[in-house]
Structure formats: C-alpha cells, structure tokens
Image (cartoon, rainbow, N blue to C red):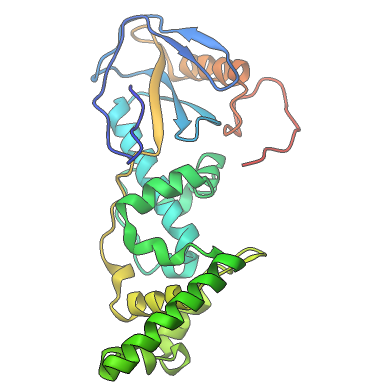
Length: 267
C-alpha cells in the first residue's frame, strides 16, 4: 500500500507481487506470495506517518477493513487527547469493531495521539479543533497583544460587533464551565491565548463537539508482509506474527516479542 499523502488522504490499494518491505529498524522482508484486496489470513504492518514506529498485527479480514478500523480508533484517540476524555464522552462515533475506549490504551494509539505529524493531519481535516492546541507562552503572549489591538479597533468602530464575546464569561454558564473543566491542561511552558479561549467558548456554545467530525484521516501506512497458506490455523498465523514482532523490534507491540525488551519506549 503506497504512502499516505501529507493531507491524510486515503491512498489506492496497491499490491506488488513478492514486494520487499523495509521496517523502521531496517529489517527487510519479502512478501512470500501475491496478495490482493481480497486477501485474508495474513500478517501486516502499520507504520505511523512519522515513519518512526511500526506495529505488527495479523488478521483474517481484508486489509482495508483493518486499516479503516485502526484509523477510526486513532482519530477518536487524537480528538480525545485534544478536548479531554470527559468532553469526548459527549460524542463517540460508531466504530464497527468496538468502542475506541476499549482499545486506545494500546501503545499504537498512545503514540498516535501524541504524534505531531498525525495530529497535524487530523487538524488539516478537522480545522475546528485548532483552538484546542496550546501555544508556547511566548506565542500566546504575542497573539494576545495582536488580538487586543484588533479587538480595540473593532470596539471603536462597532461596539455591538463584539457584544456576544465581550459579555461571555465561562463561569456564567454551568455547561460551558463543565466543558472547560474537562479540557486537558497545557504542558509546562504552554497556554491558550485569549483568541483561542474565545473560540473554545464559541465551540462550546454552538455544541460543535457534538457534531460529526472526520474520523477517516489515514494516519498509518499499511502493508501485507506475509500471507498464510490455505487452511492454516489462527495459532500458526500468530506464531508468524510473533516472529515478525521480534525481528522488527516493533516498539508499539506490547505482545508478541519472543525476547523481553525492558527499555522504556519513548512515544
């Protein structure tokens, strides 16, 4: 499967007979037999769009179904990371293979929700969530100065134009206050600018978080790396999966490593 483009658009499924695949740790494998869009019973790899982490898995379902499922869970995980778990519960989109809350503790999704490349792709398709990305203190202070100047100009020319935002205090509305209480606190050295906070208030007032968002942003590159012979068992497929996990040193796999690796994984 070709690389996801910079906007997270879904690539066409392309299968190459006996193709060679290079993993993040430089280990290489050659596909053992031809595969197509209807291939089932195989081992596959997901590579994050940052190209720094691999995840090995196996399935008896078509690759497109698996990739769709992975990306929907990942997109929900990114959304939860931006707006907070409490706010995320207000709107969980349907997922065909189960709720993301049961799966997003996997290292695969824990990495994705913190990956700047994946988050950037999510925001390109869901620009309404940009106000939930905190700025550095310096950037926020500069934005506050710029925004103050713009607001002063607007107030001077048309006072009524800012009435809806000037009179809004999140503590005046219990529902908005609850939204703010569930927002993740910015990390040290970061904060939200006044412009961002006003946009957040507007989003909460308009219930935009309850609207459908684009959860089909493809944040992984996928490839089938081994096809199982006909009539092989699930156990055999999982053994092959374990061998790939071990040889590729797949950092996002919790299970499957033949040799224990106690090194801390930096996501």
